[in-house]
Length: 135
Image (cartoon, rainbow, N blue to C red; front, side, top):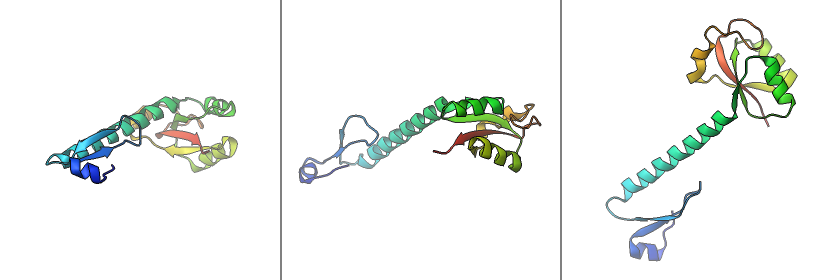
């Protein structure tokens, strides 16, 4: 928000969104605080939605380690969602072999691990995990 002497005279502020979109003015009146809250909520929702869509587009489900390794070796980037049996030694082997590490255990995907085998060890999976390389 920008507010100069002329804006004060007019009772308005000039706003530009850092994430893009048209510039706009807001009246400095009894609704100003609510209007700013509304604008900030819309910006937050838009930023979240954009980030979520990008994450979804870049996340690929894989069922085998070979599938993930082949994708990484071919230069593919992004995230790989895989059934995983938590095992520090196997995680270290994956990191050494293809430089990918676990980024997180997505809370909304854990039910998918039921009745699946770990994509690396073949043992019953305990989690769904997202693997990726750091750049």
